[in-house]
Amino acid sequence: MQIELEQLTQLAEIHKKLSTGYHICEQDFALWQELDLHETAYSALFSALGHQLKRDSRGYFHFDVDDATVNMGKISRLFALTTYSLVEFFADQGQDPLRALFDVEISHEILASILQQQYHLFEQLEVYSATDLKREVMNRMLRYGFAKAQGEHFKLLPPIYRYLDALMAVDQLSDVSNDAANAQEQADV
Image 1: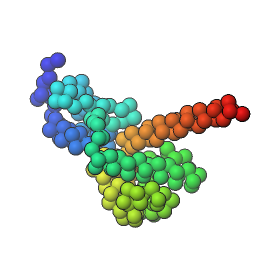
Image 2: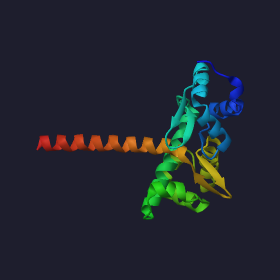
Image 3: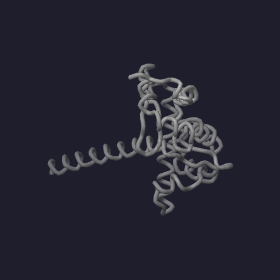
């Protein structure tokens, strides 16, 4: 495939963002439009550079990378725990959690509530206050394209689906394990 580099007008900015773990979504209008228009060329170029460009049908691009480093592992665990806690929080409030994740602005009060509800888990990841949660999680979510700032609040963006998908996979594994345990109990009776 012949790649016309002069047509890839946002190459430097797109590569810089993606290589730092950022997720480009439709809110990043110019970069999104550029990737959408020239996806094949960007994918081929990045592949030649050792990166795999992934496009999620729910509206974002990212590099498929191995989260093997200890530091990134902790960040991913914090993102997953926060996402799980928000789902639980919204469900407890009688809201549709999936809709609320994307519609509700995440305030300091919501952060304080989820921290209180899941303190024992956040404590294991060295998050002890809503201020820590904002600094350690929400500000990183901004940096990686999982959220955007709305004044003092945060709005989650489509890349958060990566964590929702992981939570659903864990839930399905749990269901399979429970079914197997129930079947074993029935066989033992």
